[in-house]
Length: 209
DNA sequence: TGCCAGGCCCTCTTTAGGGCCTT
Image 1 (cartoon, rainbow, N blue to C red):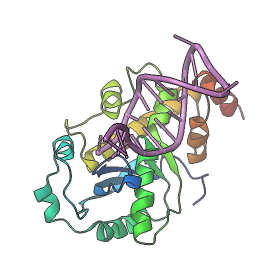
Image 2 (cartoon, rainbow, N blue to C red; image 1 turned 135 degrees about the horizontal axis):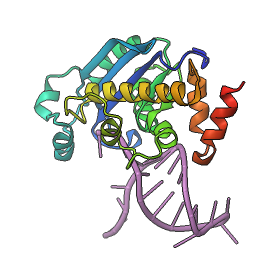
Image 3 (cartoon, rainbow, N blue to C red; image 1 turned 30 degrees about the vertical axis):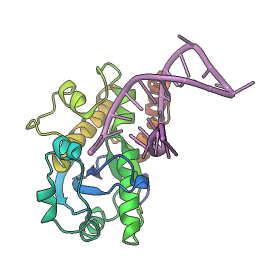
Image 4 (cartoon, rainbow, N blue to C red; image 1 turned 180 degrees about the vertical axis):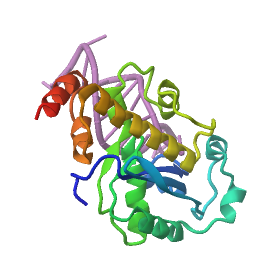
């Protein structure tokens, strides 16, 4: 899909995993995602998946996902194939996208799939557009932007939904502060590579084009 | 034996180091 698609039509995803690095053999244990179309959530995806080994106690405590819950879950390959069909041609957004992209790439590689679309990162964008936030953890930004939530963190669908709302807040900021009526996905990617100091001048030039 | 992620970003930088974020 072209990067010229509007930034309010994307799949926002979040993985819970057995650890930090797929290169160390860690696997996904839950995927949660929402489909945003024209700024509205029109689809949801959430599934636990069995990684084939016991996850550490820290991960059980951190996510609330137990080994008992995973024992009854379908294998990663089965879930990731369904998720591939859910994503379709859409571009993707995640909070600290390099993390989720690394697991998505690895899990899809196991089943012979390859991402067709591109990623944007709500954390990198927040660092540039929400510079007055105390920090740029998802939970902090949700509070900072007064995003509705149920107090559930570190579960995939809940985090994906909050990331989607944060993403819409970022788009709203571009619309209200810089009069960019329909930010493109490509613009969001370009913003991620601008230095924090250059953001205002970059957006003013962009909005005057 | 000891260690164990990696990309991004800032600065007391660029021949580097360390903090932030994700699980």
